[in-house]
Each structure stands twice: as structure tokens, then as C-alpha cells.
Image 1 (cartoon, rainbow, N blue to C red):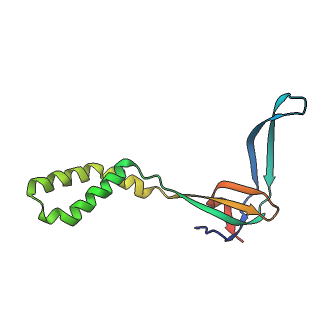
Image 2: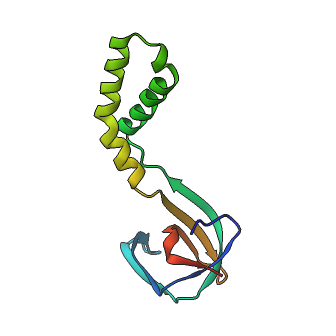
Length: 130
């Protein structure tokens, strides 16, 4: 499922949010830590506020893409030795390109729930369409 900004969604399962710690200072100046935990029930509805696609393309896969484009565009007119060298470089980077293409694009969202809570940087798979 690909989420879009403005789309209504609901949590697909109960979700517990933990590991949040903030340093506080009480009126007397003593410092302390506050840890919290929040559980949101499955079916809690909200609206997608932001969608972020995290591209994990490596330097090797970018280089493969660049060199393959050069080879496809200009390979026919290249001197034989230059073309052979370029083909060898492309072949050497093909494993990185294959690995990149096999890995799904990671998408995270920010959702503002109807109860006022905001869940940020959540994987899109934890939501169903509302």
C-alpha cells in the first residue's frame, strides 16, 4: 500500500510506544528523567500528514546506473577497447544494482490521529485504509 498525504488511515494492530525519555527539572532545580509508554488501540483513525520515501541507493548502484546509461547511449560509437572497458566496469557493478533493485523502498509516515496524538516516522505497513 502506498500512502498519500491527506489519506485517512487506521492502525492495523495495537501499538505500544516506548523508550521515550526526557530530562526534566522540577521547580526546586532538581533534575530527573521521565520515561513514558503509550498504547494506541488497533482501529485508531487519523490522517496522513507527511510521507517520506527513504531511498537507500548506494554509491555503487548509482555508478552502475550512470555507466550503464553511457554504454546504452554511446556504446555503439565507442572504440572497441573503450567499450570493452566500460562493459567490464558495468558487469563488476551489476551485483550492487541487483541488490538495490531487490530491496523494497522504505516508506515512513507522519499521522495525526483524531484524538490529537501524532505518530511520526512510522512504517506505512502498520496502517490500513480507513
